[in-house]
Image (tube, rainbow, N blue to C red; front, side, top):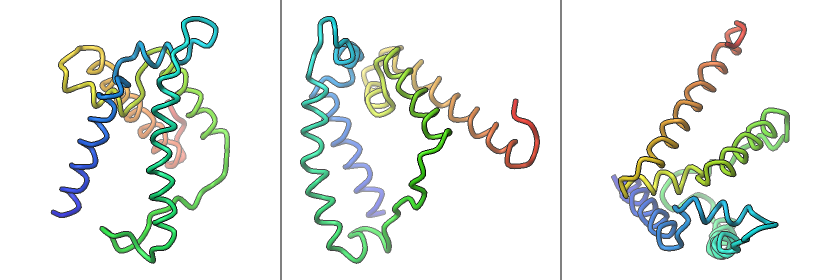
Length: 145
C-alpha cells in the first residue's frame, strides 16, 4: 500500500509539473523542434530543470545498498545499442515530432478532456499491443504479421 501511495504522489507531481510547464501542449513541443522557424526553447529548460533533482537522486541512490521503498534496485542489464533500440527510438521520435506528444504529457493531458490526447494514447496502446503480438509470434518461431 505504501508503494502505491508513493507511486500515486509521484505521478501527480510529474503530471502537475508537465501541466505547469505547459508541456502537455503539443504546440510547445512542435515549436521546440522547429529549429529554423519560430523556435521555442521552453522544452530545453524543462529538461534541464528535470536533470537537477534526477542528478541529486542518482548521487544519493549510489550510496544506498537498496532503495528506500523496495528490497533491491532494478537496473537494466542490457546496455547494447541494437537495431531494435534504434528503430524504436526513431519511431518514437517521429511520432513525437508529428503529434507533439510523448507518453507522459499525453497521459497527463487526458484529464483536460480534449480528444487529441485520447486518440494519441489509444494509438500508443495499440502500437504497444501490436509490438507485443509480433514479438510473441517471433519468439514462438512463427513469422510476424
